Image 1 (tube, rainbow, N blue to C red):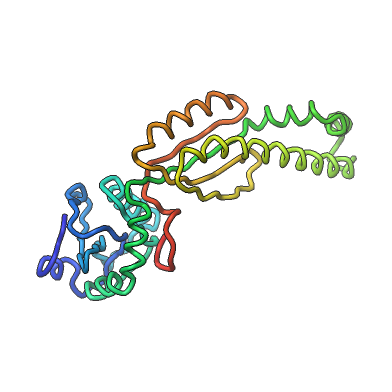
Image 2 (image 1 turned 90 degrees about the horizontal axis):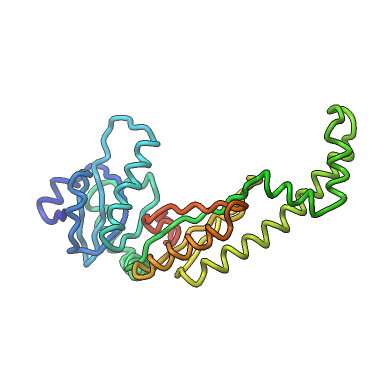
Length: 253
């Protein structure tokens, strides 16, 4: 779905538009026909936009639409996502953004060409790993035994010490297991972006960029890893999706 000249002026005109991201000009985006978007081309690049109406729309619904458009674009080819909520004043602003940042957009498109983003999460079976920690450390086992039947107002110091020991042991386990998962993933991916989480069952939350040609090896490798880690650690794979984590710049996601 490509609009140029008078078609673009009619669709993107002088009224505000949602800015989803940038693709290369001239590509076939007919898969977006049901998403009510317009492609504005300028100097070899194209911005994907839609009308920004005055009627209120729930942010959660807007966010889902933003991702739906970008994931559909990524399924068809390279796309550089814009940050959710980016609104431009009209066609001239859209064209100006494409011209002024052309080299950056083009470089990012080259970087993600033929690649897709996935998210990999590794989560502990919380009860299982805590049992391991108690079994491995006699100090933790003794403190747990000494405090588990005490009323809340008694044994505060021992409970604090128990919590500290468990936290240290869990951190050690997490570092070892995180390294194991990353060692298995890294040969299969182009790049990764890791997120820290505070949940007790958290082992790893990482976004990875995968060559389309290596997708089978990547997914197969994760299946083997998941089988090896089960039931102590549970792996979750989400994707493919647009490369939200692997582009830079103030106007990008």
